[in-house]
Image (cartoon, rainbow, N blue to C red; front, side):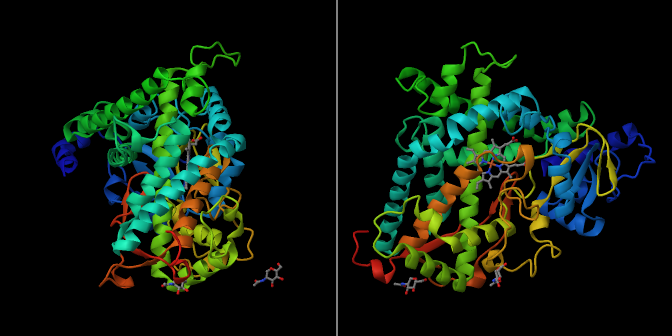
Amino acid sequence: MSIFLCFLFLFPLFLIIFKKISPSKMKLPPGPTGLPIIGNLHQFGRLLHSSLHKLSLEHGPVMLLRFGVVPVVVISSKEAAKEVLKTHDLETCTRPKMVTTGLFSYNFKDIGFTQYGEDWREMKKLVGLELFSPKKQKSFRYIREEESDLLVKKISKSTQTQTQVDLGKALFSFTAGILFRLAFGQNFRECDFIDMERVEELVTETETNVGTLAFTDFFPTGLGWLIDRLSGQRSRMNKVFSKLTNLFQHVIDDHLKTEQHRDHSDLISAMLDMINKPTNIGTFKITSDHLKGVMSNVFLAGVNAGVITMIWTMTELIRHPRVMKKLQEEIRATLGSNKERITEEDLQKVEYLKMVIEETFRLHPPAPILLPRLTMSDIKIQGYNIPKNTMIEINIYTIGRDPKCWTNPDEFMPERFFNTSINYKGQHFELLPFGAGRRSCPGMALGITILELGLLNLLYFFNWSLPDGMTIADIDMEEVGALNIAKKIPLELVPTLPSSFVNKKY
Ligand code: HEM
Ligand SMILES: *[C@@H]1O[C@H](CO)[C@@H](O)[C@H](O)[C@H]1NC(C)=O
Ligand SMILES: *[C@@H]1O[C@H](CO)[C@@H](O)[C@H](O)[C@H]1NC(C)=O
């Protein structure tokens, strides 16, 4: 509302300083005509991916828009996405510099928002070695198993009292528990400076702030800055940022106090060990900003996407009892009915669960618009010229529902992945939940392990039903979010023990 008032107030100003940008003779992509200064911003609703989805149905899969005065090309087809992410990956693999991303990446010292170059390459290498490598993953296995046990125990309590579980809360605690112990060596459950509830709030606040378009980035110098000030956007952002930095500093200080310091037992200690050590890799030097930048990425990119995917999966399963029944029968037949604990070997055996997850990714990609890219030279996509320094947004939500790629695209039908080679790993451009190319998600393997483990625990040990008086038709599918798009209304379900397990200790 306050932003709208700013607009009203400043509109005459817009008109005065507006200069008509002469239309180029080049063959640019088509798109909706925008207004002076604000471009197409007035055509966007609460959810950017939905707005872009609707516009692309009208204007095509390669569409030129303006966010304020900044040109943005929106990609909405498999073929065009392939041209950007594969053919022209190298020319488009940098990120635009924006106010919010600059702040939350500690001045572009992270992986996700940093421009293409040596910092990005070295940071990615480092995290690949210290967090994502198969060796690290093996050594962290006990953490994932402990967190699985905790999840199952917590839900078992609700089966005794027949009360509903807020799955978002339970799964956030599970996922964040794993990731923060892995990366930060910190169990926020047993920690005296913050609790899980506040961590969850902070993740959401951070994400909202990073995902909200700041006017400074899209309006002429000074004007956008003024709007961000007046609307309070700037001060909200600074407040969240200082909370985040405080938390990170606490975690770092904790490491410095103990023997965890420099033993490479987690990402923080490995990086602390490298700070101040001379390196022989060119001009690159790790600083405490790099450390916080990476923490910021894990915090932002690591947790929510997984939680959101698990929630959407459970939502679709409860809406489709046939699929739920088939899935649980398959899981229990494959794994037997007397397991004490799900192990990571079990994840390899449950084929139908993988299809269910793929189908969930198709309909509900947690990041429906991949992180923005920026062209580093003039390129041609689907015959259209795209000049250097154009922002590129890839709308994988639209691609996942494209009737040219999928039969009955709006139907939840995991069987469509039976007998296909299509997977989510970045070689099949109709399904890109993790992106593709140089900028694709480096946390894919870990993210998948966590979400398969979480779901398998929920589905093996419990049966799920809607709270009393609620029917499938009452399940709300509304979306909410900025960078990551989640289910708006929390999913609350009632767990029961499947008959075969009733006599077990759980
Ligand atoms: C289900 C889980 C996950 C999903 C669906 C997901 C999805 C994505 C997507 C869509 C991108 C942007 C790709 C692009 O712009 O082309 C991305 C980037 C990234 N993700 Fe993930 N992610 C997940 C888990 C994780 C985890 C667990 C971590 C780390 C702890 C992580 C760290 C990152 C980082 C650092 C980037 C930036 C890569 C770059 O710009 O070079 N992600 N992720
Ligand atoms: C639990 O679910 C399975 C499969 O969905 C079903 O066969 C079984 O009868 C259910 N058990 C109870 C106690 O509801
Ligand atoms: C699966 O693929 C094989 C070989 O491509 C084919 O022979 C078979 O009929 C397919 N099965 C189904 C159910 O589509």
